[in-house]
Image (cartoon, rainbow, N blue to C red):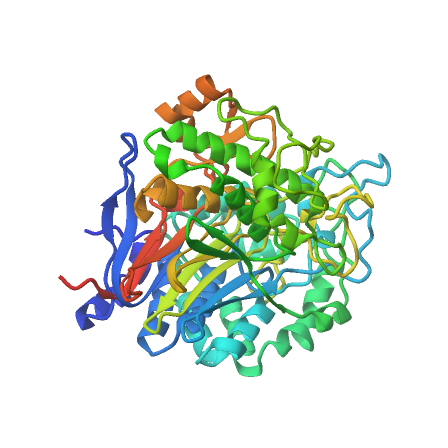
Length: 619
């Protein structure tokens, strides 16, 4: 049987019907081994549109919309809404994200910033224990009403459909409503994530009722069918009345009451944390923002990403400009040398991220200068081709550079990572050549832990992405109305104005390195996109140790990086937990004529993903 990713049993009937009609192909299995690796990657090659997500139900929802004549934007909203049902701990209407769109007719990339915002009454010491004047433990910060930002996902869907969609909101929500009502089969990942958050869910009655329904508040059993009538009703309500019904009226009042009246405690040793300060006016004032994308040219490829408030586009782009200086494809047989430069370039780019990047509505971000190839050339001077630099490395001076190597280094920037690893990503294309790359999240696995009673969705804890200790020098300091800095990096790559590759990933600040490493694997190391996505990952974010998956550390090139170059590695997390994995990426690569798509998803990370096309490859 071909590999279909997660929750095969939940959609067998729908897939069988589609296969019978010849409209939907099952993904083939690709051996994506590198240096002896034998992972099986979900990959589907074909025509008429394609999709890659972490979940089969979500991929099937997108394909259903494409089969009905919808475009990539319609399908992306359908997939995202379905992920709000099947991946409720990663995404949903209680969160936010970034939407990147390639318009085939105009040959243009555009973006929407749907990041959450801080309420107008957000205190700058929101996460500080008044007794100790120190930040609360992160788990307490995250499990609180005060951590909830004004959600941006509903406004993002509405804006995307308004600008580029061909279907109504109600039509795009239909597949998700069907999944919520009929249910999906619980797998090991869903149960594990529930149990990992049990202590966070227990304080909130609506959360306990929905996600811990078993005896002694046990999580749903593997193999059981999980339904969510509340989210189905919420989607039906929004489909009928539009997204104004989320940001004003009864639902908005319920969200505000939930945030402000959530159980709270000032005891630093117990959950939850402080109650929230969101108001109805905060919801009513929210706007998803149309933005120009970031852009760099890397070895003849035009790479487009998200501008601030995301740090993804600037950091990926700067790292690519740094790497452009080196002829990495000429030395691709020396994989450790290529990876050494990748790790060093990301450390430099992360140093500049920490110094300069925040919400541009509140901070003057030198985006153009950070993405200037001359600045990248000057930063490349800091890389020793033979030895790993001591970390953290110095931030560059974006106000004074000329591309030469004669300047004195600036002060070291030791940035604290405030982002959690859990998010989700989807990639969609259609038969007209339009492409969507969309990363969305509720931040922490399980968000704030707070379900809006009777509505079936979890509220985000995105405001923990702000630096908890306020400093006027910090571009990511807490400010009312501000969007916290994000690492989400939905990326579309063009070649001669035509799509070449679209990709993105969850993973907190490791999103940036996941996207960058996949690009390096594909463009510089010459891997196929299947191999590039499946390859073991390592993430250098300007810290003393490189965070890496165990398979990377144990590989010959990982050992060579340690002994030959002096890189220090630490495992990504405890084996068997989601923290042990870096990212859960999705991607679609396109043929030179743009007609054939290769959709690729994760082989094993987060339980494996799902890649589907509308029509299979012609033999």
